[in-house]
Image 1 (tube, rainbow, N blue to C red):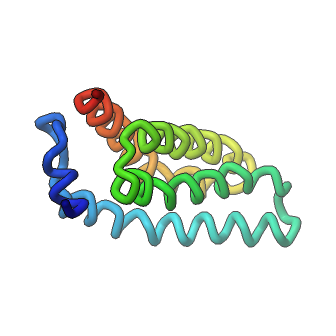
Image 2 (cartoon, rainbow, N blue to C red; image 1 turned 30 degrees about the vertical axis):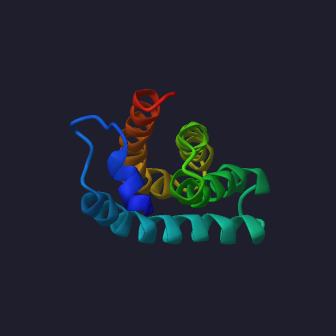
Length: 132
């Protein structure tokens, strides 16, 4: 069974966005993430901000990248739920951590936070609805 067939077979809430909508949202978010995270990592490595400020950005990036292989490769809803909570928590952390240094970076994360908040509730709902 393909990943799309598997995903379509899951019990999802009625408000689940279409896969095309999800893809469009990420097409908007990824350039913002690339620009802002790249800026923060550059500033941290140049010593312009404390290195610890970049830690939640690194955690968020790793957790974000791991979500798709966990969800659609391993097809493990429980671990995908844990992962998306890490994405959400590290996103809140990075917004707070960077605020004193570069407020524009925090503000630029608002669409990402909104989407990840929706995605977290969606993932937790899917995980709950498809528990054994």
